[in-house]
Length: 184
Image (cartoon, rainbow, N blue to C red; front, side, top):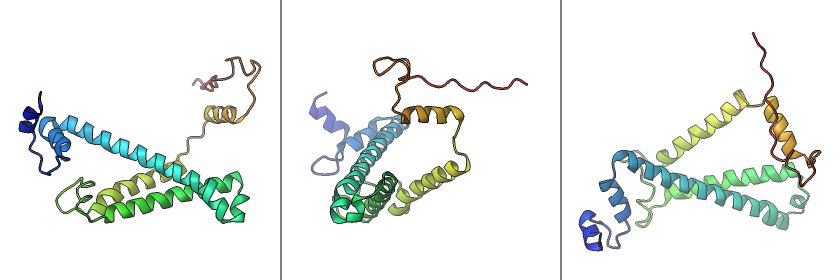
């Protein structure tokens, strides 16, 4: 298919043709595949935001905070972890606030998902808040502590390589056996 045939398939609205991909997926793909493309966009964006937030938290807790405060140089491992988590939440909150308030021609169509009067702030914040609240509440109400999980975490957190030694493979990836279930 040459570019002339593609031009006939999709009539780009913007002069630079930057909306051609979105129009092409909307006009040529069935709804199920269109949803899959949108899910791919969102998952990539979330992964990128996650890695950016982790990088910023690491830079802040390891480089910026110790340079600004003598107290931060003496942070324990737990204090550093809490500072990194707080930095992540603050960074993501500021990023969402800025993203939803941008009112320029360049960015105005980037985050539009639902049309018909739903404000952009609600399109972004309500699903995020619901998933965050559910994640925290479910974690507190029904934690997943099991003996097998605790044994696996303990094994991962220890430096002991077991009887096979560092070169052996007997202890490296061994999972604890599930606890026997009582017969009844």
